[in-house]
Image (cartoon, rainbow, N blue to C red; front, top):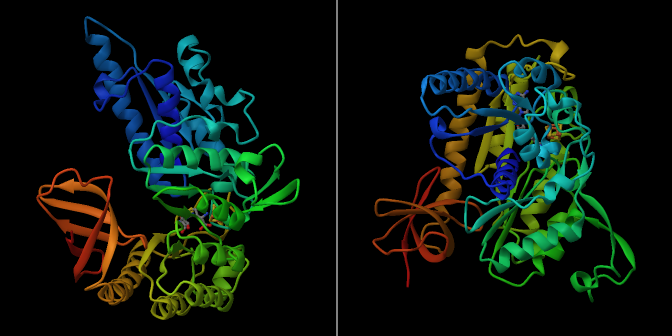
Length: 440
Ligand code: SAH
Ligand code: SF4
């Protein structure tokens, strides 16, 4: 989401006449889109402030002095806004970024938190400047209503609001028409996406697809509508919440030939008691049942998850339940996070007594299981012929992803493969990467 927001900020600044520079020291304006999920991300901002201050000092000594303006936005806790206003020229709510050029020009005021910001999703309609010519993110909603006990997102991004379906569909169609091949739909909890649509007004988009005059578009319906866009492209999405991930989305995925058979379904813990104190509203059995249904409908689905190790009070036995779940589900990938105590969240008062070394040890244990399951899953790919969307190149090696989001390395002297679908044959499996050769 922060990456996507940064592309919208770049879009606004470019329209206002700014150009991107790779060198910090040359910049007139630096905008930082920060993350507050873990304290370590917040701490990094302090070192950035020091860096920016050095640039400002050095500029003062130059004969052709041009000032540096620094802006902080993204996911910022109220408490941190008050701290960082000392280090940045402006601290701006993410929903106010359309006002950035005006603020920079007028040097409005140091603390912009008093700006009356849009409570809706209008800022998501700002045209982004995509870094890639073939892969793009499209936010479908912002905010979150779930208040998981460890998480700052509902405080930094406020309540959940869905973007109108017609705006999303138009944006995806436009991207596909312009050659984009991988579209990531974004939201903190995409499964609770809801928008009301007037089908008369949008007859061009919805002709013959929806009979009623007005109807509610769920996430599953949105996927189905996006799937009907003609072109050669894959749609992926993140994040899902297991409590809201239901059969309708499974069916839309199974039926949609553009919808990637890849799912990130964050479980966070394999222990019911921990899930309860995390405020997640599902049990391990319910989670496993959803995975079972998913695998039944889409046998080649690749699965990843998010985990927090060392949540307050997580006993060794409770952690062992997560290990057990990992062995059972056999994930392809997992984002394993060491618990970070966040001020203002429900879990804050539970303390953070599990030692850093113990968290590290639990992280390693899960990684060891994951390496084995990922390798076993990858071995099933050897000998298979499939399409890969090539996204980068280093020396004579190309890298890309399958529709199941598996990383593939292809050795080739051919030119111009980046950004294209290439047919390959998988020759070798590693835990985190498949090796392949091109087939003509
Ligand atoms: N909306 C997504 C998660 C967004 S945050 C969901 O519901 O799953 C991304 C991930 O960061 C989370 O899945 C969680 O594993 C991790 N995370 C969030 N808060 C954290 C914290 N306080 N400490 C460690 N990891 C955290
Ligand atoms: Fe955070 Fe939970 Fe919302 Fe995900 S669903 S963003 S973890 S509060």
